[in-house]
Length: 248
Image (cartoon, rainbow, N blue to C red; front, side):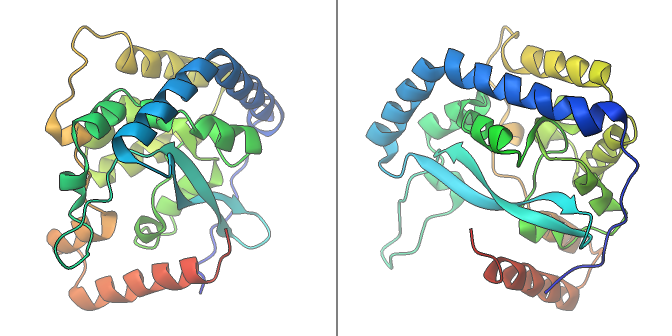
């Protein structure tokens, strides 16, 4: 099952030819320089949460110019939630399974270190719109899905402008603003702002609004009454069909 095709966007020389080379260099440097940190976090995750150490999840990536559809890829993170279940064997809610250790990983963004390998593979870029879930993508309009004409990023304009403390509409608007002007200077600026946001701050504690699992886009639209239950179920079914039709 496919969505409406999204037209291609004119890309600059920097985005076409230079950005990918810089992504490879940055990803390799991160992996080599922080290999010790990868090892420490992997041991802590294995000790506190068990296996697997890595969490992978299908995410919509760059739109294929031939099909006008997003390529789906597996995004990797360090695991941050336990497998705790109720008496019937069902997984407990995300906010329950996200303990102190998991919250600390997310608050410091250390859970996202494995995404350097996604960047190295070419699935992602250092800077770009954050890859959302497939079940979020299906609720986006064709105009909003223009954000997928740029590679998803480890960080991006929406991240430095508020991350999870801003609405879905604001996130998407910031992403669309970014793709209109992708330049080397803008990417360097966003890398620096991301660095400041994560590391250069006296108070490492982030509000619950930023570390809690945020509401899916479809759920947010339904809660606001912007779509009805029938449309919600239809699009959720479309997301399941898309995931069912891919092999990762």
